[in-house]
Image 1: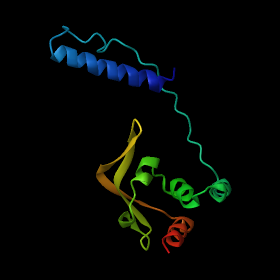
Image 2: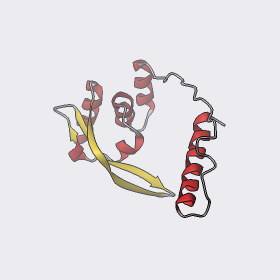
Image 3: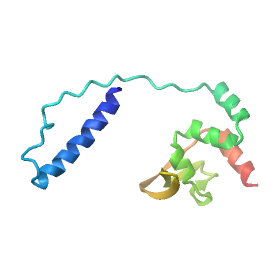
Length: 134
């Protein structure tokens, strides 16, 4: 298993045991300060060059989605939560207000705690959205 997966599992288990201590079901959390979590291996991020992004967008059913994800760095759920009112095309800004998440098979849109804006330097992204709106 990856170190990240092990760390997540241990964090969840430790939280459950903390609740058991709070509820006085066990005297102490046996995981506290006793387990050694494997070190994470930092791997460099891999990014597509512009030519490959354009080629991918050219093959996609919705190239604007590919370009927006590639050049803004927003996540899929943030993109799915976007509404037209969140786009400021003249300023080349996207306000991230909602985030779409999937629970089982139901898609929910939830508010982002501190909505933030993403600026896109890519004229291609803005142009594609403008063409789509007209």
